[in-house]
Image (cartoon, rainbow, N blue to C red):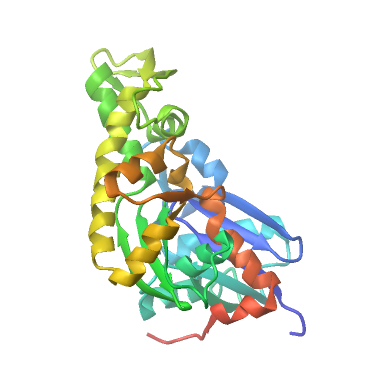
Length: 337
């Protein structure tokens, strides 16, 4: 094939982000599939509208778990539907640049290959880019002449810490705390304080709207939930202090893990990070005042990225568009396991 269309794909636990080079545009949809047995009912944003509202016979599944592919077949369907909406002829013969977590095993890498070379998507070349590298490129961090930079990515199901120096990731760690765990913690806190049951979708909206980590800026938001005693719908004004209490345990644990991670970082690099500050990105970095809270918890300063959940896909976009950055992408060959 003389011309292959390049695509950048960031498979997140919550959302799929795709960059199309031919249209020079990024697309995002929820990484969800609603199905009844083998019958696919809805994919992407349509499946998200059904989330927490379906009967027992219908399942709404996330093909990704903690940033890794858990169900190759469902993930291929999600990608196929999304790519067809971008370009009806994009299901075969392309170049696909995946972002992948650090220390991905051979079996896990093979799952990425199978996602775009299976039943629905075929004849695609696959390239892998480490997520911290894609983040660094998007954030404008120099890679090769870098004495030490740290990136924290707060994802949907996990938070990753990475230190980059001299053109490589020298140390990286992922902890299983992310946006979903924060949403569930908010649900629990509201149930405890108000005897009100809400869904994680409502909790997510509260998290980014009034999830302030400092009580000197009180706020409130009205929501509708189910009364835990009567089982009837009830409207309630939720305080930002209650939402903050729900978030605090998760953020305290992230801060604790981050301090432990920094203690394992070589002293000269840690000193450089302390001087330059830590880069903070990912969807959950939208929480109000989060950088201030982490500064108090760890003693380091933070640089909050305005890219949020789009950080990695913007890095893939640059790798695709700028030939000199292609060296950070490694081609994945098919492998029989």
